[in-house]
Length: 434
Image 1 (tube, helix red, strand yellow):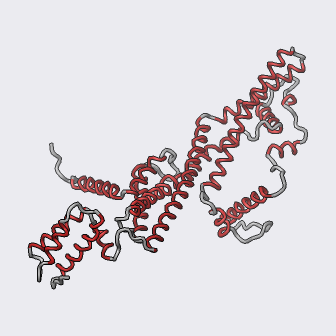
Image 2: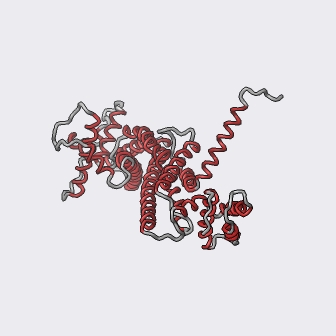
Image 3: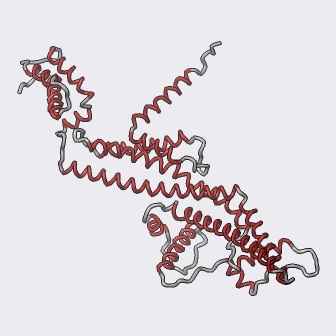
């Protein structure tokens, strides 16, 4: 082997041989690099200015498009194409496990976000359609039809009239019950989403939260009113434990409803016919409506009151605040990080490319996550925490994934923004062309 005194030439020849050895796997289309190496080795004491050395440098520069510097750096450390060492296999398995875990986590969080968006859309629809007024009208219609039916039965009306009144009464009861069930189920889903699904979307998060946040006080102990936050945490975790025990216990008793409580405290409920004045005096409309509501609750037709529907507006606003971190921070960052992982997994599939070190892998994933978050700022600049974020959807998440996969596009867009900003700043103070 020829040894050169000039370190620049010896280093150039060593790199050229590494690249040439890499080219044996069908990377190069010709043998120009091998010929240039042979010509340089024929020199007895080469210098950087000799034509053979200059030609070798030129040919090696031409190979840089096929063999990037990262591959050359890996070749210097002893890596060879198709390396299947134990360390490489462990790194590959780690990346596969990380990507699968990320996909499961992102899938779960996306499901939670879509569920929240669906619940929020139903809340907004109910709020926009003046559901409270419709519910009150249905109660009054059922109550009026029931009065007519009782009056007709008392006056011994014909069978045809009674049949028609019964059909009208049953239809109005069905419509009212349908509205009641729709509102009740939506309210339960909204409350469950805001208290359980959204704060604790992943398995084990709620258990860990109660394990480390709840106080060690036993059940039945006096509440510490000096610390409202801790009291709320203890109450929440205590309710979850009680619910789990109830679900796993043998008892099948149902919890006491508000309607049951009212009926039991009122004793024998007076029907709507008892409210009507028999002397022809003007009735108390509010008392009549309250009696109708209470009577329908005791009969099991409704489980809520019209006054409770006003809480929907507050529920909708609170739900938007819960969805904001998912739409603006969490999901865009995770989709961008997943794009970064997919980029490195694609590199691992190619045996001619070296596997990235752990530091570069973490750096790339972190940059992908930051790119997704920054993209959310650009695509939704007017969206603030608690604002209307349900319309962001998969367009943002898709671009976050693409930018995480190809950071070159992301940085090119940022450079373009910087150039436009610099051009705009330079115009400040310049004379306006007439």
